[in-house]
Amino acid sequence: MGRLITARKIAERPDEVRYEFGQNKRYDQVLVIDPRTMKARAENGDFNWLASSIAAKILRARAARGIFPDSMTFVG
Image (cartoon, rainbow, N blue to C red; front, side, top):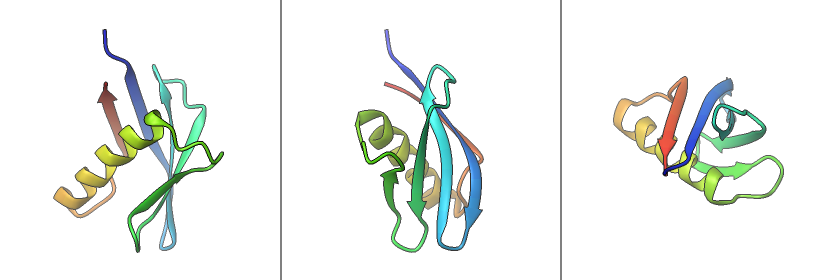
């Protein structure tokens, strides 16, 4: 059985885009993306597989659509 990781955008500024994310719609972590470099980091410093997986999906959607999505889901 896969794990459901969900994220929702909580802020978008010229210098950063922020998403709350977590497993099974428990938004207990924050992902921060620099839109100038497209580098992502976890606000708490723990860039684990959850953060990496959802960041990659968000960045692929951004590359395809030209905008950061309002929300994203990843099953891994």
